[in-house]
Length: 387
Image 1: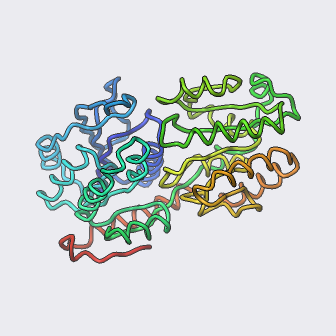
Image 2: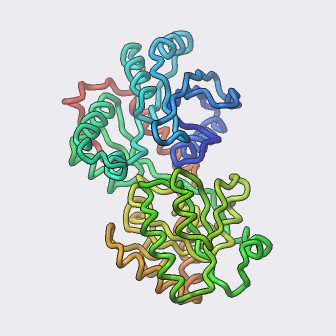
Image 3: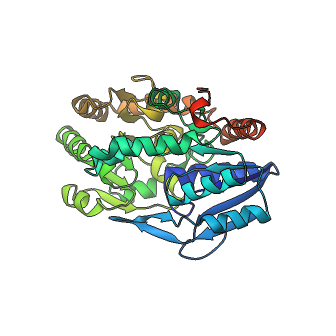
C-alpha cells in the first residue's frame, strides 16, 4: 500500500505527534509499504530517508510559540504532487492550514483519507485565554474530521467524548512503547550523581513541554509539598518551552535538562524514582507509558493513557481529573514510602509489556484498509463506529 502522511510536525521536533508518526513510519516501511510525507520544510532542509516521495512546504511559526510551526496551505503543490504519484490512502495527522489543504486536495482527487485527533484543542483554548472560541474551534474540527473516512483517537474515553460532540467514523488506535529501549536496566549511577543524588535520595522527574497547557503550577505546588516532607528531594525537569524561565525561577533547586536526545532519554527515566505528570491536556501521553516501561511509579490524573493503564495503588497513582488536592496528597504519600517505588514500578512495567508498536501498526493498517475499501458517505450520513 502507498500511504501519504500529512503532518505539520515531524522529527527532530519533540512532541507526541512526531513521535507517534515516526514509530508508525518505521513499522510500515519495515513491512514494505511505500510512504510519502508532506510537511513544513525543516530548518536544515533535509529529507526523511526511506520514503517513496516527500513534499516540503513553507512553514509558519505559531504566534507566541515560535517552537511550533504550521504548514503553508499549499493546495496546488499538493494536488500536483498527488497527481504525479497518487497514494492509495492519506493520513492527515494535524488540522492546521496544511491539513485542510491536503483534505481538499484528497477530496478533489477522490483519494481516501483518514485523520488523527492528536491534540485536545478545547483544553489548549482554555489554557491560552481563548475559552470563548471553544465552540467555534470544536465546530471547525468536527467539520474537518467528519469529511474523512475515519478519525483515529488513542483511547475509548476520547472516542466516547467526541462521539457525544457529533464526531463520526471514530476508531481507536492506541500508542505503543519500546520496552527494550525504555527499561529499568538503563539506570545510571553516574547520572544520578551528576544530579547530586545519593543512592537513598529520592529523585522526582517531570518530562514534557514547558507550556501553559501542561498544568505546571500544580507541578510546582506538588514538588514544594514533597520537599516539606523530604527536604533531600532531588528534582529533575526534562523538556523545554515558553514557561521554562518562569519555572526555573519558581524551582531554583531543580535540574533543568532541556530537551534530551532520544538516545539518552531512557537513562533519565530509569535513573529517577517517580514521575509527576499533572497535565490534563493530553489525548494520550507517551510520557506515561515510557515512565512505566522504565519501572517508575507515575502520579497522574486518571485521564488519557493514565486512565487506560494505571490501576491506582497497584501500578501507579491516578486521581480524579482536576482534583489538585488529591494529586498533591498522592505524590507526598508516595515520596515518603521508598518501598512502594519498586513495587509499583515493577507492576507498571508488566502493565505496558504488551504495548508494542508492531501491534499498533497492525491497528493503523486495518483502519486505513477499511477507509481505502469504502466509498465515503456524505459527512451527515457517515455512520459512527467506536472501536
